[in-house]
Image (cartoon, rainbow, N blue to C red; front, side):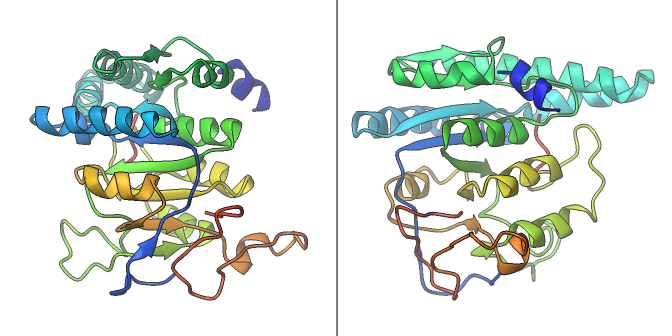
Length: 282
């Protein structure tokens, strides 16, 4: 599995507002449904691009991975109708992510379209002052998982932008009593995901391989509503925000006696030097 990677280069929310981590490199996994859903929200996309460029001028650095959204799911639907297998469906969905990444990259002043580049190329691209923008890279590997690998390689914060305010106890679209987690551990999130079937084109908050990557390297992570650009800005700048932080619990690393996590007693802020931190999207 490492050769493949090399090849491609819990508490419920309270009234107290969370404090974001203070970091300089962020990998954003932009769910395709945010920017490439039923109807394209031009104002939203333009605000996202201008906000990222504004934050870059302030010294922050970014890598962006774009999901497939409605085009990917439509390709999967057609593939199902025609009876092709999951590998072919994944390949078709990946093409949709690459098309979306191409469009988004064209809106930035200084981006590098990385749809055919290795994950290991991202560090040099960021060092050159550009924004590497990826789509999917490999069948069975979602764009969330690609973003997690990039965050692991870059020692960056992982940010998932979805169409809800974070991770819920159940689907808030169908359950009005669903509770929003302000924090959730890797293992708790994995237990939720294991109850769902991860088939091509399905909609969940992250996916199991993505969370396993986050857990194995204790990657700082958050899930935010991609339609709230001001909230994204606040998170990036280390200010108060609304969303879900994914962080370790004592049960996540029982065998790791050297692990030292601050703020494990229910606080809503992170030490800036030790931050531990909807849909399966292609």
